[in-house]
Amino acid sequence: MTGAGLLVLAFSCAAVAMPTRNEYLLKCSGCHLADGEGMPSHGIPNFIGQVGMFADIPEGRAYIMHVPGVVGSSLSDQDISAVLNYIMKTFAGKSLPPDSRPFTAEEVAKLRAEDIGNVVEYRRKVANILAARGLTAPAYPWP
Image 1 (cartoon, rainbow, N blue to C red):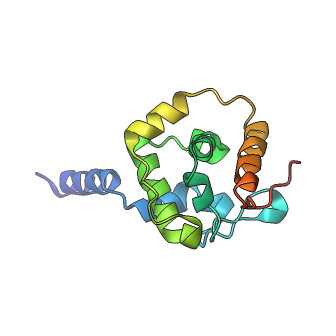
Image 2 (cartoon, rainbow, N blue to C red):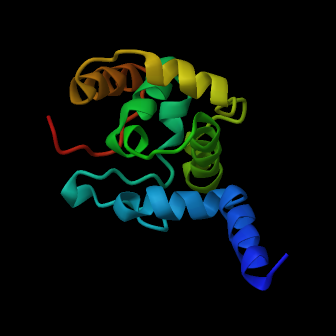
């Protein structure tokens, strides 16, 4: 194999095995920032110590699959599950219950196929469910 062929092969393998952190940085950090702080003043919620509450209820898990960054990410179901698990592990802190289950590619596919209607209205529903549990969802600019 020529040097150029080996270089192409190396880049192809690197693209297939991209670390999940890099996927987060490429697909999510433009809005939620590299440190997960988001931009609440621009309608992008902070992940830190808060995002785990969404993963603890079925409606929250469905909501996550329909946020613009997930819908438009062009990632596979497997990659989305890996990135979401990275987000939970890295940013959720105590907001993620210890018995919370990780996202799977199968769950991602199922939840992405669900029609939740208007994502802003659905988030309100999720926030109300969380409030009934004594939890306050991260700030969100659309009342």
